[in-house]
Length: 449
Image (tube, rainbow, N blue to C red; front, side):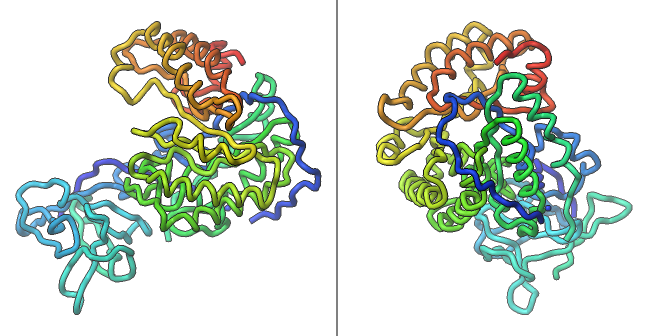
């Protein structure tokens, strides 16, 4: 059977004893914060440093979308009705029902998920292949065996390898914290995945080690006088379907049934770091997507997450991320108004919308001084929660934009986002692409803080 790749999500996500500082956290520090996101460190985003995946091309990685054509029948395999019925081999052309998403268990063992989110498995005496199960078990696990003479030809055999590089110890180091402080940064926002609460042996396909790295970050931050925002970037079930939310195959599944599991992660983080002098805030969830995430589910979770943090610290701020997509930017203000030391996080990118590709530098800058300034003022009420531009970048979308253009664009954003009452955080400290890489932009003299 032949298959072809569409895109791959790669998730990389080790025990140490951590003794929290006995010093009470000081409530007073300088707001607004000038921060940077340590993106691609504890939650991997493949696009930010593609070299991490050298040698993996052509492998069936988590989330790969594949289609199979019977070598005997010359027809594509299809999940009838997109799932809930049998698997057939009778389609001349391949579309959504003929596309299967891979969950990788090892380099040979896989689960296959169909359009309606069920898994391919065996039924009856093991003679019928169906797609009806919502949870993969042994009967939904297949060995995919490649023909050594033709890697695109595979056999299925019905029925724990992991990719791991020594990434955490060299991607961000104590020297990086020294560089940040020397260049005017006062805090770091650290994206973490839900599996950090299960370190050192999280469930498949995640790997241990991120908790030890986060402990190191707290130690370095305290030593060098910086603050740490811990940001739950990847929630159980995925809150937006994107690779950075650790969706295994691109589906958004977070909802009411995941609330308790997610609160457990916040409780774990608050218990571990709540009294640490470097902690300034815990962000309950990054970029929940509207309308896929219902507002009432999100507010229910935010209330429980806020209470979990407050059980361990009266001082740390609790950050509530606005929903991305078609949502009212002020929809959390009434709820947040009844809570103490809370922050609304908004993300502003002049990307992901065709208009930004058509604009020149001045039009992009004008948009910051006009539209973004207005947007920010809407989530910065006089006596309400504080505001935080938790992600922004100097990357521009129009053809021919130079790094000097990006420096001017960054200056405009600093001017406007400096009005956020909690502060701002650049995305990201390191990235292959210079205009996304704050360290490089500072070294090149294009951003001054």
